[in-house]
Image 1 (cartoon, rainbow, N blue to C red):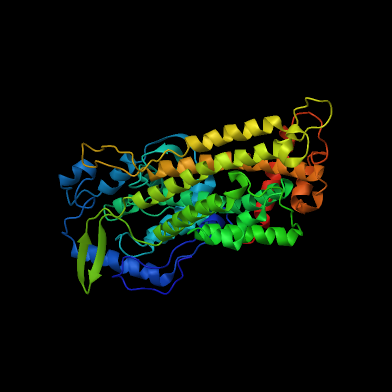
Image 2: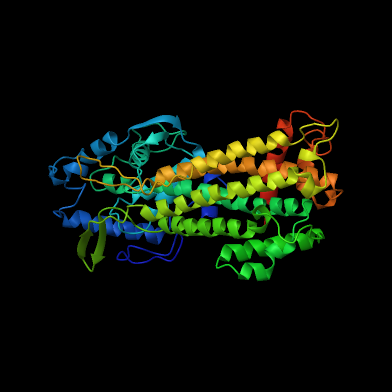
Length: 491
């Protein structure tokens, strides 16, 4: 990481950033990080120059923060930086998963490697050491994050970095942070960006599995393949729709399935799938682009640049994460919009006039319930997805005695995305369970992917028994099969 060709100390924004896949690898400890020497040297040169110049009026360095921005800090106050960190470290609630903390550290390290913060260069070394040794700060769910900076999480990280708070594993702390580095370290939404990256990478995996599950349902109900033809996709303006339709065509070709259309025109659950899922993919790609770009730009407030030997300081609001909030809102809404069509397909799979099978794919005595309750489970999960789609970017707040009169609430949008993805797994697993049963009853088991069949077989006959019973274990098997499908999708 951070090994691109060095740039001078003047540029603030560069093209070197992290992909969501790379962040996932670091978060899972499948990839290590290193600090590029040339980048570290550039950070060190700017810091040294700032120390030599001195006297610049700089927010958070020579002043207080928030509503205290008009109050000058005594130049001899050596503890100003550490007091700032301690006062901003307030958090509450359950601890965050280690993967999210690692993602935050990776993002912050990448950001700080782009010249602009004026921070001490040994901070980069400390962050890299934390990741290398897996010596993590303890962070909590409820913190001071509203889409302008993840203040509490980064304050606790800084206090851990200097040895004032314990890390999860032993490591050598760096010296305490002074006014030159305390606020620059806090001035980032690295935790929000890292969490967004992990959620979007998870979404990308589920996206591929969802297309494969749809293909199973389409085969089970004798769908009209015109709906995902090249001609149909050309009627849209969505790149995602073109890609999804192409993937469906490839799946049918690879599986040897060329269903005879049972209807001239299918319900929207089938007919509009490529359009709707393509819209989700378009929204997700916008969010991915924004998230990845945010890992590779200096956004600290204020920003420093060098013009020859002249230091320039710029106070700004580039840290205001409104674009990320809007993009994640878009993904949350696109996921919620999928729910009616998902329930539509479950209804089709349960309908004898469509499948030619018994109601709810039941067997045994008349009135058996079969997969009836699975539709209810999916509907409840879909309600969770809709509840997680309320836009956050239109919210507002007033903080710090009126100094900050708005916020983007990007962290809350990411939290909603995490909830929605957990619920979407339930919806997808419900459709997979039902589609597999329908295919088997129609003597089309050959279309069931091997990884799916194995997952159901491991559940103890779940793929072959249709008698009324607790389908919870079978739904668990479908969830495991969902993971196998996601793993099988080419990256």
